Image 1 (tube, one colour):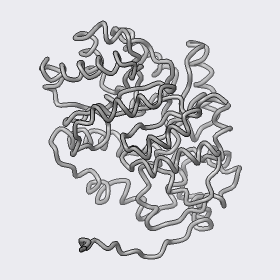
Image 2 (cartoon, rainbow, N blue to C red):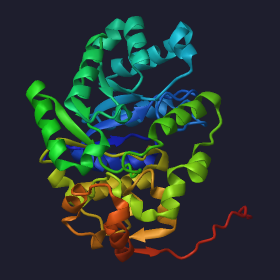
Image 3 (cartoon, one colour):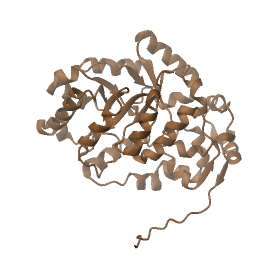
Image 4 (tube, rainbow, N blue to C red):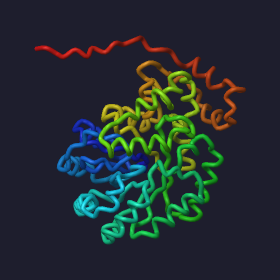
Length: 357
């Protein structure tokens, strides 16, 4: 079988060992550049220089394509106006490319893409520019306009396009968009995000992306506090059955989605190698006999309190959820189903006392 998974790359030795055993199923790796100032779309306040670890780890996995994450929603404007600030990024990208460890970049900020192209045209011409998940490409028109913008730079068009997670809950529309893309770009591979686990069309999404970027710029983070007190964590804590409307793809439904798409993207790099290894194993096996919440990135915190028995969810769940009209107040299906497959986990009090020899 051809490799279908795009997965995060971390420098954890045990995780790299695991990836080596699963390499035949891995199409691509995505990794953060080793800078104190984060360039990607996750909180990294304690980034350290791990350049040598990154290179040696990537060298162990020669097969998959490799993409550097420059997909923050916004940056400090000085990054785009100060040539000195951009030079370390260009140097790092050039180094990885020369070592054969870089096929392209994942981006969301067209300003950054344009500036990189202007400052390093030869490097840009050797790399794919792949729109990140937070570009939210859910139509052929959006994909075309994104590609037109890439063509205004020296970067190459990507070999694949990641469609917005909202299409995971509308199979007819997913199939329609996929057919239009293949008609316009016959060699383009189509990718879907499997396990984010946020609210369906989350109303906090754009602001949350911006607050993550600001946290990295300012060096202090209050994003989880905001979500707990005002956002999606608050909503899911009160009404956890809402998670069933999240546009995740269960491992058991993978073949249905592969009728429309070519590749599946796994997320959750901030949760570490153990989490990712468990998730990747589940999608490789096309089955998971455990807590569904253990597979989800954004809603993983709920797994501490609730066990959603994935094995009890019907094989036809995907078809039922695809028929959802969004009128939750009149339906009650998700609430009833969630109650039937979920139980609360026993209260566990962590022992945070220092260990004494």
